[in-house]
Length: 310
Image (cartoon, rainbow, N blue to C red; front, top):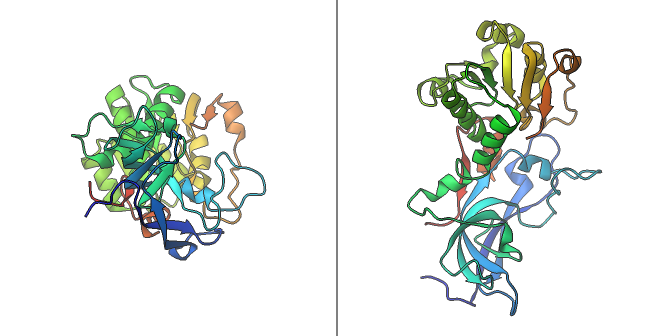
């Protein structure tokens, strides 16, 4: 039975139990039951939403560590609910742009109900006929990341040679498809033969390889890119980035989206050939169980959690 407006209801939420060092585990998080009031404070422009889908994204690992110096996004707070992009339905609203029943996407809590004090950062979903989960993927933050990183930073031209690491992930697979639509030659790397097959048969990559089976990444890149790489969409860092720098063409571009191979290391690996950025005049810029699966390489495409039925 649907909850009534203004009612106080149980609210299951995922909170950070302890700060993470090294590889995260489900024990670092905890599911607790609190309460939520399905009403906004009198006179406020806040809204209350019922969360339908919440997104699992690699950058969340960085927020689970206590940083001595501020990072580009704030650390999660112990005992507080995790937050990330999600799809929600408005339950109560004091904001003129959002009414009860609207479908929206924006930064929300890993919980059943969230009070949003400032809804201005939320977007109204105007095409509810599409699967709502798309708004955590191709129509949400991963889609925006792929588009902005590839086109604004990568500056692709027809015929460019493009390499995408972590290519079977939510962002990587979109970058590969955007590159093909632009007329580029695209190669992706992934961590299993199944993912490699998907890249070539479903996502349209020209070639793909399992980096775990390559003893020499530099030799592998020379095999797929004998003339060098124009654009490297960086998702992993470490040894892959080091091998790529030696294989970039002059004036190549590297949209740096993430470095997932480094997130769980207590001592991140150094890249020893950064002088290649100068020598080749490269442009380098930053453009529970479900979440853990991102870092262990289990998922293909977009990882999300269904909180409630649509």
